[in-house]
Image (cartoon, rainbow, N blue to C red; front, side, top):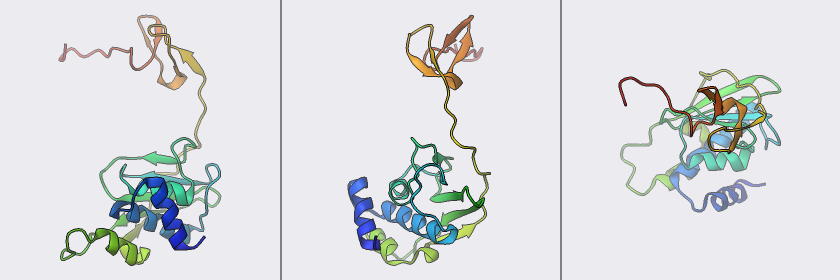
Length: 176
């Protein structure tokens, strides 16, 4: 698929065109080039995004990373930074957005990000976090307070009962 068609597919998924979407679009293209990535059917490619902004939608469309498959994770730092991993080779890269030009007129971010080559937008760095393990599947457990089912890794034991996070009351002597 040519770049313009891919951009249109990302914009349709996201709902509109914006500078943030263009950032993720260019990050996904650069990661694909650097690591030899293509659309991930399962967890072949992993992305850890340091933000939950618009660009993540382009990464989902281009590289097939999604929360549901377990290959899109968030390590919230508020940075426009994305770590990409290729499971088959163990290769990884962290892409950190460089500051846009100080003299860029207001409202010109989309045009700037669309026209600037990906390699000029990002600093390419080693990843800070190790490649996460593949997503696990946990058995369902019924909360003994509310009756709702939750994954076993989210269940807590309190007063001899298995309770979900919503029903769990943490103990804190300073905040009654």
